Amino acid sequence: IDLREKGDAIGGTTKFFRDARESVITASLNGLVNRGRNTFEQSLLGRAMNDGENLLGTSGYDVGFASGSQTVTYVPPAYNGQTFLSSHDHYIGVDSDSYGYDDLLDNLAETVHEHGHEAPFIAYVSEADVASYRGLENYVRMTRFAYDRGGATSGNLFFTGGSMPGLPNVGGRLIGFYDSAYGEIELRATNRIPTAYAFLYKSAGINDPDNPLYVRVHPAVGFGFYISEIPSYNTTYPVKTIEVRIEYGISCGRDRTRGAAGYLHSDGLWVDPTIS
Figure 1 (cartoon, helix red, strand yellow):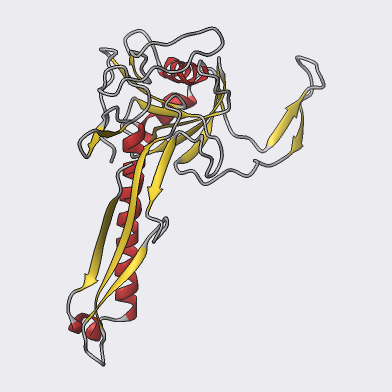
Figure 2 (figure 1 turned 180 degrees about the horizontal axis):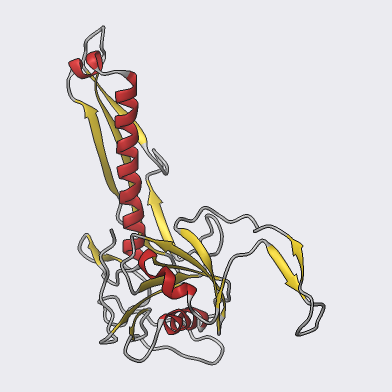
């Protein structure tokens, strides 16, 4: 996995720290961290939804999920009596002239499920498509009540109070669930994904080596932001520049079948999206 350092800085002169108010310094540092967070999220979704292979050195590659059209040959292991070819692809184009968002989700769920990965799944969709997903027949809205008619199909409707279970902070806005033919899909919307695109994966849990994406960090600094101070050699104002840096690399995990991305389009072909 390629390891790259990204960062920015404030200051540059001793006078900056002499004249700047504490609130200005704090706001500037917060701005750097926010831009760094945006960059990391773009990198994460970009790797998940891009079938390209990045050359590392002279012969190594940073790869995405199974992609039959790429340089590195990959044949997924046979499962449950089904075998796969090197042309097997987890970047799917779905013809919008004949199919809809429900078919997009079902196709993605099937693509991951056929390798032995059971529901529940998590899908990231575009914020622009939320109304379309909420209108699907198998869309399941979030509720804080459990409804019951005691087994009857009509009559009085009884309900009991409840609450949503604790949900991990995995990004995106939770908009509900979809009851696919292959199990429950948790739907999360983000403006970073353009309309008609979706990414579905099977999580293995926090820091589990079976997760669909890996994040590499440098052991000397770990994950997250760190600060480097450049001195000015002025005894009164000893800091010249404050650098805020983050160093990481992102690639597909050891199992290239745990995720899939889809694009609902009139020609039914996959095209890498631009992550904002």
